[in-house]
Length: 132
Image (tube, rainbow, N blue to C red; front, side):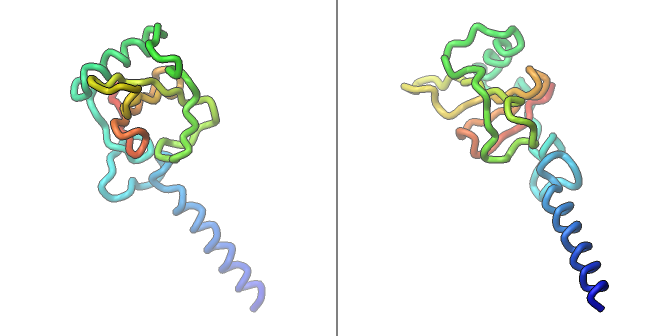
């Protein structure tokens, strides 16, 4: 009886671990209302981004020069909205906001160099994966 109870608990624990990881790192089904991009995010075509974002993508691809001192800083992914990767994998870049007195809320986050790009216009509350 005790062995059966332990076996059931082990199966439940494994199922909970597997289900908890679905849709966050690109494995399993995406959560409802999400897209098929890595991490279950929606895709966005570069042409649908603001012109300032497209200019920032060109700077990232060229390796700079960048207008803001924080451009290229490690993005920690504390919000856990992007697929999990080791620290230092993601870098953040400012997308200028016309009329803003500071850096504004718009950012591009690059992963693996410029191989993966994510755009946010609400200061990391949501992301869209940029089609490459």
